[in-house]
Length: 362
Image 1 (cartoon, helix red, strand yellow):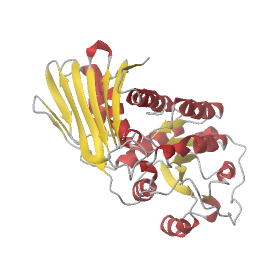
Image 2 (cartoon, rainbow, N blue to C red; image 1 turned 45 degrees about the vertical axis):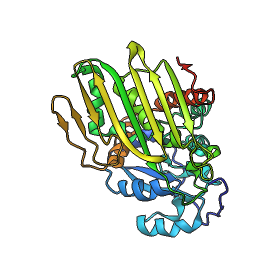
Image 3 (cartoon, rainbow, N blue to C red; image 1 turned 180 degrees about the horizontal axis):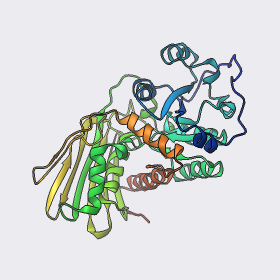
Image 4 (tube, rainbow, N blue to C red; image 1 turned 135 degrees about the vertical axis):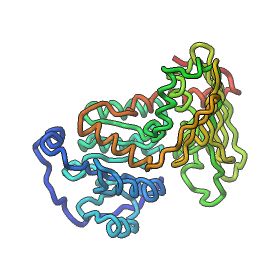
């Protein structure tokens, strides 16, 4: 991803820029679906987002941005994408002149999130950005600033916060059906093989590593489960297969929240892990798996079972984010939420580089 083939766009844009503001278009034609351009055509776009956009009610796939011209015929044939809605990374700014595209969805290595979020915002498009938001706190703040300056909505792709079982768990931090939370254990990970040693998730400079890719799941989960922000963190990071990874392969981190709540978390590229286990003063509840694309299920000490959501998570996420644009309401997961996680990730890295010493937050 660090070196990209460029290609020349051979056709002009079919539509000129409209003088009518986007919010005016939404109010005058509420039946029109929002046009989405996927920026980056890797696995997540190809296997999950593009198929999900065939199921959405309020948005649709209208464009692509890619550095690989050999991918273009497949996408055009399968999804009917016009020549005028195909861009590369050098001419992506020209998307400003395309009224068929309302949203750019950034699905790139983490090291590129900031750059292309800003390109999208400055082109006058709303931005959906995959998690984690960016490489560090400063980049997150630049992304928020650009979207605010251009009066565009920025939302981060934390699909779990759109998932119904998860939303029930989130509601419990106020209802407290099992009493106050005393401790949490959360872990997420998968076994990444030795194939494709150049994959960006294996390399630190590209924003790879278990903490960035999978660790934000338990981190975000303990935050939304408690409804609180941690006050301190300590962490350790490991690389087991040094021939494959320049970024962390395993990260363990402990968080302390107000009221003495403790959270222990683990993320890994060396083992399959997927659980959120919550102990309370009057019982317990567990979500296992808690961050899978399907089959999310909660159980509890009183025998309650919350059935898994049967719909498409990505379609639900994108439809809800589209409605926030159409109705000009707050998005469910704004840039500020992504920023909060990255501030903690920065502290986790700081602690890990100092032998797990406690780092204060807030």
